Amino acid sequence: MFSDGRFILKRKTKVVRSSGGQVQWGESMLLPITNQDHNLQLAVKLYSRGSIRRKHLLGQVLLGFESPSPEAMEQWKDSISHPEKIVTAWHRVRHS
Image 1: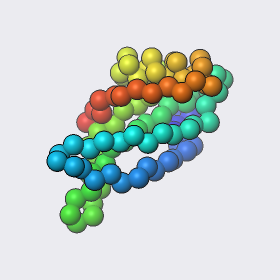
Image 2: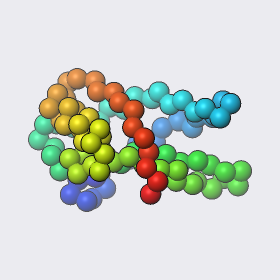
Image 3: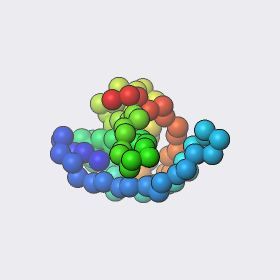
């Protein structure tokens, strides 16, 4: 999570093994966001680990008011407007 371009929070999720080429990720995150946090952005990055234990960035999605994705921007607006509501959405990751 970033605020005014500064890194402020990092969360790591569990490693998920693919099953028949399909990876499913259903982990929830609770983030400390209020309706006053208009300058926050959340970068969600997807990595793959090769056989030599190197991380390879597959892509990312940026959530925030400056997001290049209209769907990500709408989810962010909904999350900021209704912080008590659980907001779920699927996003396509974009290559960096």
